[in-house]
Amino acid sequence: MPTALPTDRGNTLIPCEFDTLTEALDYAAQCNTGFNYYTARAELKTALSFKELREKAVEVAKRLVPFAEKDARIGLCATTSPEFAILFFACQYAGLVPAPLPLPVTLGGRSSYERQLQRMADTGDFHAIMTPSSMEAIISAAMNDHDTPVMTFEDVMELPEGEALRPFGKDELCYIQYSSGSSSSPKGIIGTQKSVTSNCRAIVQYGLKHNAMDRGACWLPMYHDMGLIGCLLAPMMSQMTADFMDPQDFTRRPISWLRLISENRCTMTYSPTFGYELCVRRWRNDAELDLSCLRIAGIGGDMVRPEPLSEFAELFKDMGFSETAFMPSYGLAETTLAATFNPLGQGLKKHTIDMDRYERTNEAVEVSDLTNSDHIRTFVACGTVLPDHEVEIRDFDGTVLGEKKAGRICLRGPSVSPGYFRNQQATEASFSSDGWLDTGDLGYWLDGQVVVTGRYKDLILWHGRNIWPQDLEWAAQAAAPHRCGRACAFSSGGAGDNKTIMLLLECRTRDEDLLQEIHNAVSAAIRLEVGVPVQLQLVPRGSMIMTSSGKLSRARVKEKYLAGGIIDLQAKEPLSVVSSDVG
Image (cartoon, rainbow, N blue to C red; front, side):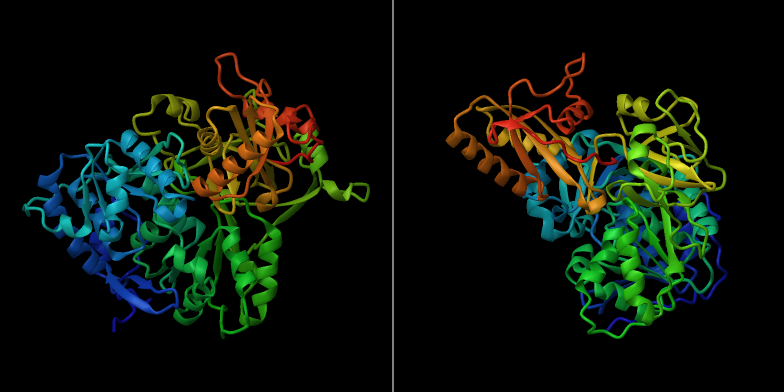
């Protein structure tokens, strides 16, 4: 039976004072700590010390140097496994750029996943894709029409071994990351050694303030920035032991995450809001837990929703959990991971505002006795900006806004990516020449902290997933191509996971039986392709609003829909006005 790696480093804590990942691992290998991998029942499967990680990564790197030229991209299926960690760091020592790839479970169907991989392979120009043998068939099928070779992790060890290493320098690349759930024309976010080490340093020294007794617990996927940076790279750069669960195992047995924390005396963990919510739903009072060790229960990756978090705190307070452990934060992959952190011990700083006033004036005004109950909404502050970084809230004309004035969140600093890999158009749309990133998010200042209220771009956030409207639209059009025209998807009504995902589809028929056939076929296709609940409305031709360049304007179509200006062909009357929402 393997033995779990300890919390005690057995060496001096150096909190991310390194210029490259290989420098950091060279030092971490001198410590007793590393990564532990657990089953769905919180039983230890494998322990991978930082010393062993370095040895194996160097061994593999010597095979990769003759295999590919410097800076070649390598697609890595991002399993929660020692093999992924070894290959990721092997690429660092070999001067190759790893691109962590999502797994099939992240999408609703195999065909959708295959299209996602094909787009990533096109944009990333991969030299090879490396995968566990269990996934070789599906990856090979996806790459059937591509020249990209697919190799199993075992195949890599059969490559001829060289002698030289080729580690990245401090001014070179680190990885390419595709945003979670991004399957429509995916954009590869460039991570450099500087952006990654800068962000990890800020996380460890300022945000979480790692100490010599800290230990992490994580179930987040390694293709996501919170999993890759927050759970893999930042712990290694501070020589901290981390205990991992596979994301699928977490969704089946979320309480095992809490058992890991309790039994291993983990002091910090991170999750989107829905992870804490899932624990509340699945709790059966059938485990003994002591969560008093948990000094940081981080929240990130989606909108911070106070109600489920308060339920979690109330349920587990008798087991030692303190609500002051909650640490909301804000960030995105374009800033490597983190941009703001709550002050330690603050817990949930809530701000309840009049949403009707907010939507009309972009002002975050506190509720009063006269506020209609339907217009009350509570947001949570996500903390202050990291040192050496800047945040501005701007209106759509670029004017910098003050306290409680909502606008676009813009960021600048050493953690910000230089842009998207081989996608100049997308880079110019989000990154300015003077280093500012337009995040696509809306928010406002509250007592010097950032409050995030939603997105003004088209991305739909649902249960911790990023749903691209194009995926829904394309699936709908493919399901009934001869009778349907344009489609438009957006979220409507409610907040957080209570929102409805709407899909409007133009149809060239008024026949009731045919409309029902189309509705049934498209609904089934959406369930299969994307795996999210969607409210489908069949609408007449000409319902969509296009830009002067011929592009679909989702924002204007949504506005028309909310105003009751679009006809439901199956209802034979204008749609009723749906309550407005944020994001």
